[in-house]
Image 1: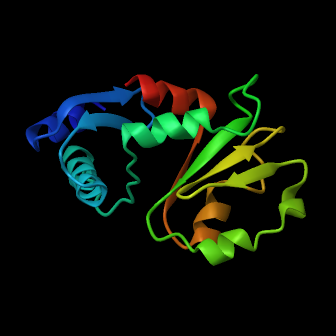
Image 2: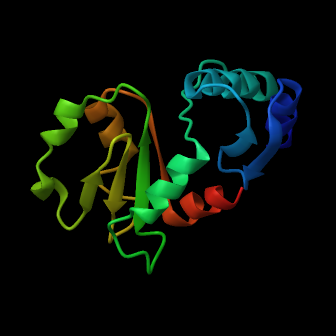
Length: 154
């Protein structure tokens, strides 16, 4: 993560901060989300040698709203997750998902993310990240609630 912070700083990002070794990074930029995603992808390639990775970017205001609007109780932050969807998600395919599909798991769709209640944890969840990527037709990345709220403080 230190190499990623250095690569982003060298590329012009400001106030670069990372969260653990989770692949999450916060930074200041005047770039639009798509350009910021490209900046991060280039920085990852520079710092790790891994080319062509999918990057999902959110603005702080969006994270703030996401946290405020969470429809699930967050007593155990390992049971509440968010799947962050890249731009261009297939809204029709997402809206066609039968809520009974993965009981006792639950989901709530939002504009560019999905709230997930995973009472048995994420390890064997039917509604894991692969499910959302296939269904939405775009890259996605899931984070548990503890990570989501930690990102807010970065």
